[in-house]
Length: 273
Image 1 (cartoon, rainbow, N blue to C red):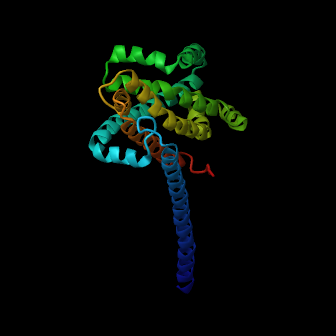
Image 2 (image 1 turned 60 degrees about the vertical axis):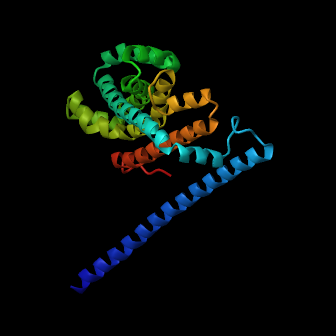
Image 3 (image 1 turned 90 degrees about the vertical axis):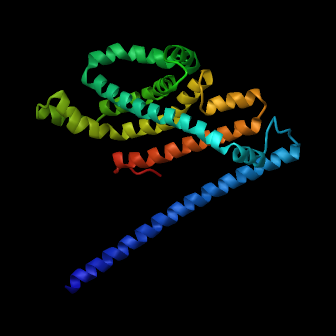
């Protein structure tokens, strides 16, 4: 009985420092981030005041904060539109890219036929494709989501396919030894080996998904952060434009933060610095 109690006390004592160290690490990172943001904002305000820059050229952070306070509801509403487009495009792009990578590995003939088409579509500038999508799909949500999918799916497809193809040759030999079908080899060996590559592709997609949505809004939209930026630029409201840009940056950072933590569940054995 005493041995059991001693074991439980020792495990609790071991778990406690782990929780404390994790909490301290979070506080440390948050402190560094806060300090970096504070230094950037102070430097920005000092630059504006030192050179006496007019607000329509470069508004200071105080002026941008005042603009955000006055139009918070308006800006957050349009930010929610861009966030919806980004999230839908991100999820659909990751699913489409993953399925395409699996299909290309399972059927080499499909890969040979699709690869030139994929390369051609990725070589075209996004600003060249966006007007066509807006013409076909309209000014609503669909054209922005498709734009985000087109921007990110190639990154997911190429990284995941490379991970499936470059799996350990020993696993491939084992699959041949047991005479596994291509589907079973994919399920038991290739997909687990390719998950780190898929996680990398998803992280890349999290950064580029907002770009597709913003480009689509820039070409033609009824709402969204790019819509606000265009209106603000036409009216010389640079402070509102900067407020929209800061909201976009926060959105990208939050998406990347969430995706980083979700991909750790996908590949828990992969440790990042």
